[in-house]
Image (cartoon, rainbow, N blue to C red):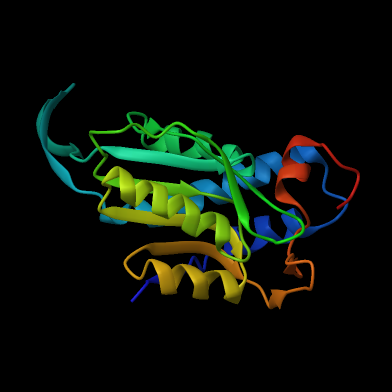
Length: 211
């Protein structure tokens, strides 16, 4: 069964409220996406494997730990790029592999136009980043590519999700853990999340006046 975690934190609620607001500027929107991504990543990386590491402090030797797994970050272009920096702040040795997917506006199906996944040497865990989990089409397409690469543990991290998207990912990839800040009410006829926050890619990159 897919595990869905809605990160219930006061800061998540506050940042998400401002993120949704139609008058939030692109600069503010980008900053809020980064803040929310960091809060979500903190929750999602709780299961990372670690190994012992001994260091010397100014007053003596102390036993600590370090990440023992190869972490792959897979942002779904283009909106997923806005979530990469917080991951690298927290996991600086993570590898970043890009997947380009767009939604055909007629069929609402994902179309892959770019893939930088290698042919061999899969990471131990892949974090798929996309601010919005709507129909689940792009997420499942990305997870199919990552699974074909050979990655055994996958996590999907989105700011908001629609029930339909969660259901699709659950159906296709029941072992994938999903982390979101909120699950919204539904998709409208155009397959946009309601109440949502508009088009995350347009708002991050200031490419449309629509909110």
